[in-house]
Image (cartoon, rainbow, N blue to C red; front, side):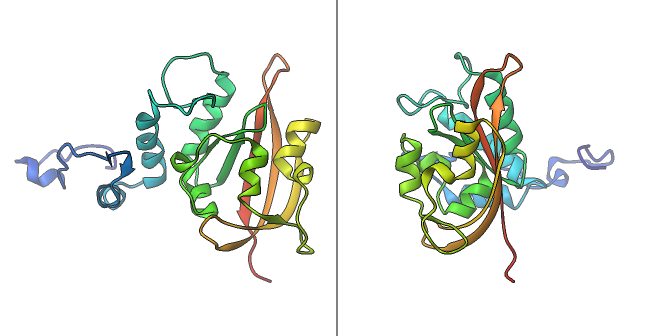
Length: 202
């Protein structure tokens, strides 16, 4: 039965692979060998990786950026819950703060843009998107204020769009997505969320 222990095991070696305490990060860099080992030995690597990536950020939040991983602090619970949900989903999810600065994107988003979230320095939405070229369906540069998550943040309404990007790794992607404002029960705007997916080739 998944999640349970075998009742007829007579020694620990029958329980499966044993992984001793190992460093997930060394000198601030992720040890890809250890992460690959974990990935091959868990049923839900996306969710597990989301949990594993949070603790190293505790205590070392980028200056000025709202830290959603460290315990404590005065952070909107809506952002914390959204980040937790995003880390458990295969769906590509991005989060912006109320000032438009990137707050979090999940592992599926990392694969899309070609960069891990923990590699990003603190930057504004304009700075971040300038590094990630976006074009409309006609191949023309998509204006900053026309991007779904920015529309959601500024106009406080959902926005849908088809566009293309070239990731930090240089790979092109045809994207479709939806941005929506994240609003507290008190009516306070706490950020915006983007849900994106790659379009199948025609």
